[in-house]
Each structure stands twice: as C-alpha cells, then as structure tokens.
Length: 167
Image (tube, rainbow, N blue to C red; front, side, top):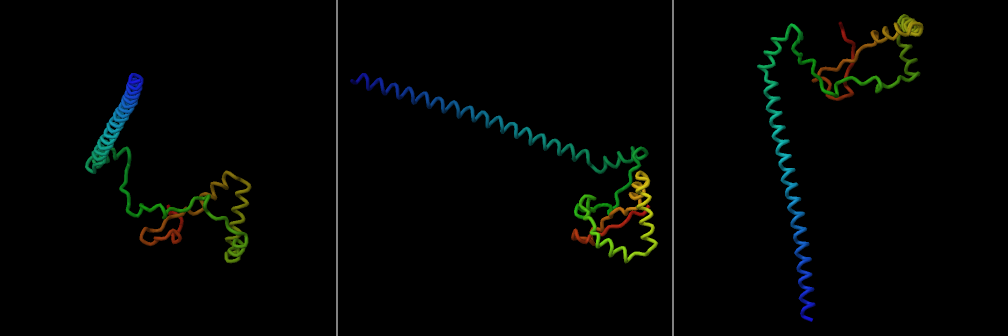
C-alpha cells in the first residue's frame, strides 16, 4: 500500500514540476517580448529625437536666409506680411456652407436696390444663360471674394466681415 501512495506522490510531484516549468517558460517568453518591445520603443524615441535635431538644423534662420539669397532669382520669394496671417475661425465659409437666400428676402432686397442695378443683374443673368462658359467666368469675376477681418477686430466668428479683393 505504501508503494501505491509513493507512486501517486511521485506522479503529483512530476505533474507539479511540469506545470511549474511550463509557467516559468511562458514567463521567460513574455519577459523577452517585453525587452524586445522596450528596445523598439527606445529605437523609436531615438529616431524621433534624431529627426527633431535634423529639423532644428534644417530650419535654422541663418541657413534659410542663405538659401533664400541663393535661390531668390528662381523663387522670387517675398516676406510674409503680418496682416496675411489669420486664425482658422477667421476664414470665410465654403460655398457649400453659405445659406441659400429666401425668395421673400430677395424680393425685399430688390425693392431697396435701384432700377439700373436690377436691370444690370437681369441682363447679366440672361447673358449667363445664353453663353454658359462666358457667363460662368463673368459671374466668377463679378462675385466678391470673402476676406477675413483683421485679427484684433473679429474675436467671434459671427463678427467676420467679407469684402472684395482689389487688384
């Protein structure tokens, strides 16, 4: 009887040793994977640092000034005026976002306009219907291009004014 109990204990110990070895082997594999991922992360961070350093060298003002001077004849670059910089909220709406005018609003605004301007609008629309290519080009030139307001004046998007560009 002692022999069967001993054999059972030896079997349990062997199974426990096998399970322990399997768990240890899996843990070592996971540890190797963690080390590999840490090495990849370190490589990516080093690459990012290298690219940032390269960007800093490429965008040095002295270097850019030398390039501008040497390629000025070919590129014809001009300095950017401070009034040319705008925020995204200061940009005009897309044509798809412009609300369609109501018919009653168009009639009310037509009463306020002069007869000459109404006739010229009618002639322009008739001309556009007759010659679509020329009419589309004329309408594109006749429509004012929206301009953004200066940065200090329009803080709210509703206060942005539009106007035409003078050439």
